[in-house]
Length: 444
Image (tube, rainbow, N blue to C red; front, side, top):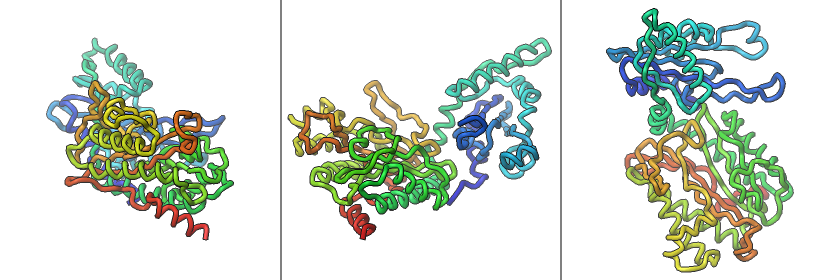
């Protein structure tokens, strides 16, 4: 699958309307184009909630959902009008006619009509829903409400109650449909091909950004025009910078290379990390730490099923990694006490995983308690990353020198099923034997 059917976005809207109170209105803005330099723009990225509800990929639009007192609903899309001169310079627009015909909204008007029509939509509605997290749009909503309130003497009545729509949409986005899962599965497959290419093309003396180019080439060659996020290509000690994106250093012999990169396909993200030796052969120390991380990942994934939660997975993983580091002499002390003191966080410094979907760090409540534990029970249709890691920077004088400068993370994308899990990351080599064999074959 390369994109969702447009009818799916109508189903998303219907699901949201079912959550809206009667006699309410919901407002969802599209993203705006951002200037990169002078008269050029960054690659456009649609507002994810707007995209989830419309599939419409133009800037400056506005989706209005109306629900009357009887529970009947209507969808209106305001979008940029057809403009022959603009289309010569910047590209074609959908326009209002096709918006109704192809995107399934009930009506569509030019953005120029918002000021005229929106007050009538707001009039006599009890509640208005919009995303509180978008402060600029929230200010615009208050401006519209003031305009309606200024006409109270003419019998106009403005909504009196404001509802944050973000949690409502987040709950819908958290549970993926079969078609959404198919897209994420395909994004993972494309990403796996890119990670294979990176391993095959890697060699001592290459720059990190050369490997990044290999990844982007493979994404695009297989239909994913953009990465889901800035690629992390971190050789040696750079892997100990969690969000390293400079990708500017030369790859050296006996270093590991950590690559955190995923394709975006029709808006949906993959998020995969692999770590492998630049020269194609793990050293003894690299092999020991790598196998520990890999076994921790497998332990966590195999425990995933409905009713499980991140907090329990963290307990399993942290205990396993703690015991492993004691065995290697990196942590010293009694294992039970080290687990209680959370000493593993000296080396496993980020979370075990996160939701995945239209956003790489996707929306959805984790049900975090006062102990900062993520206690939300997993349900079928949830998609998450599982990404244990160990990081020992060169500057860490508390460990033997042979361990310093090693950073390892291994990350898969997992869907919860009715009976357990599906690992969506199936074609990106992860075992020591498979990685070394692939790299050796490529060099031969």
